Image: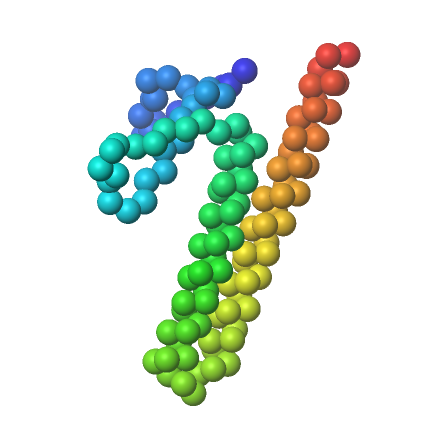
Length: 117
């Protein structure tokens, strides 16, 4: 059962999200033929979020390091540190996204087994 208690400043949503909630991701110009809707399982949504997080972190860190070297060639150490930080954050996102979800699911199963007893 989903429990929801909004704060005083937060508007109350017209309905609570369910397992059939829809996630719309749009990037770039609108397609001439309209959107291409699709459905994803909750586990797949988590994988999508982790994948986009890793890709975003890696791409922005690499681009930042390249720009730093191009703008200030004497700051190669700073560019290397930026690249290392981006790769480390991508690694943390990947590890937490993979093992953190598995740990939460295991905890939910244990709680449901205990509640059934």
